[in-house]
Image 1 (cartoon, each protein chain N blue to C red):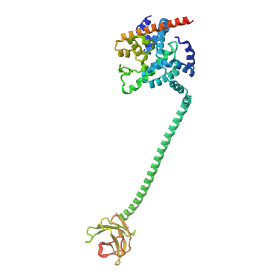
Image 2 (image 1 turned 180 degrees about the vertical axis):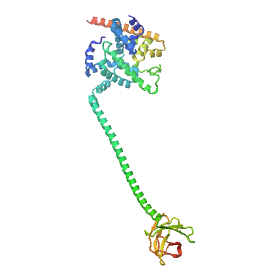
Image 3 (image 1 turned 30 degrees about the horizontal axis):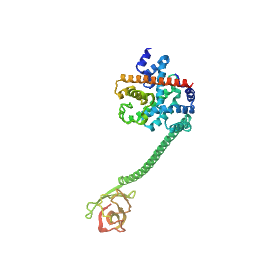
Image 4 (image 1 turned 120 degrees about the vertical axis):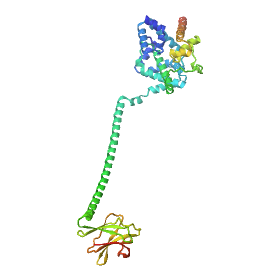
Length: 251
Length: 187
């Protein structure tokens, strides 16, 4: 009875009908209606009045709304398409596809890395070969100029080329001549230095001296009495131009 | 709770997912529900979509309808009202997040289309009674929003609603008596 009074006084029945109540108030009203026939009767009257009023104020919707409702409800194909087995199969398919893509990407990355490593290995191998060659050459030269049978000879430039310096390393045992010509004064492009051996008054060609190289191996000439450097046309000469002699040294 | 006797069979078929039962229910109740929806949203295109949405929900949720708690129409009315209020709130949320009430800022003097006019027993009530019922039933206002809209205290507003409902009851009773009277003559 207390509840009925509260419900009626506070207009909770109307609010319940209009769906305005909180969860707890709704339960209160529902229980009260269930157990109180008087209240139940009042609520039924209220429902009937509101319903009558709604029907008095009804507005017929355009027929197309019903058509649209029908077409929306009768689309079983679309529904079936998204049935549970389909969704499950699609999910597994999607997972398989994604993992395949992921594995393909990983495989491609690994392949690229492998190719890159192969290239690096090739480059390193080439560098190692070059270093080995350089080492052998340098070692040979070092043995040539540093051996106990090697005679180092300083060749100073004369008045034609006073600043020129060259060092010739001669090993009569191994019959090898190596010259460091870096100290020779630079020549125009159409000229070059050339070295000659004097054997019984005859000048024999030993080779052209490139000032850009640190050590130049030249021909060893037996029975040479002196070494001579002349300035010659680029590419070297068959016979020395004696007036262009810039340095010589006797053994 | 009682339902119309003719509804019982249709609702049973509806709960068994018989589409023809839904179309029968549509034929009977769509006008009353459309009358509520269109007065709430005041946009015919939107009201048509919302009516369709309401019946889709009725179709989907019919299992949750409990006839012991109320009449079918009351249940359907709540679905229509809540569907419409939710739709009206949506665009507001984009620009306004603090106040989600639908009608709070509505201007009283807005132009009302013809379909907003009321007819029947409610039309015979005093203007303030008409407005009180119209706001809470046809416009979707809560009691709190409605009394602010009318500019009267909440207690006064509740009295308006109670008086209006009482007058409606009287009016429908008289109609019933007249109906019985004519039926008596005919028989």
